[in-house]
Image (cartoon, rainbow, N blue to C red; front, side, top):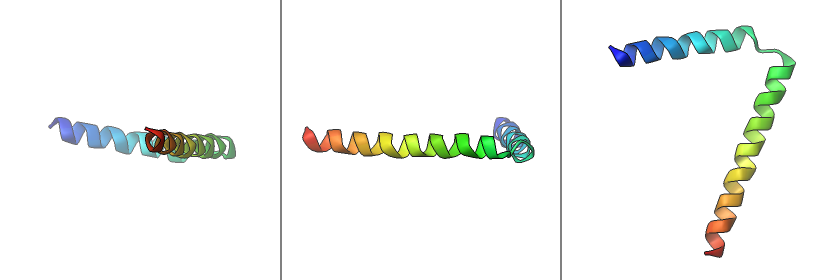
Length: 50
C-alpha cells in the first residue's frame, strides 16, 4: 500500500511540476543538473588522486 501511495504522490508532484514548468523553473533544473554533473566529475577526479 505504501508503494502505491508513494507512486501516486510522485504522480501528483510530476503533474504539479508540469503545470509550473516555466522558463525560470527550467533554468533552475538546468543549473541543478549542471551542478550535479560537475559535482560528480569532481568526485571522480578526487578518487583518481587517492
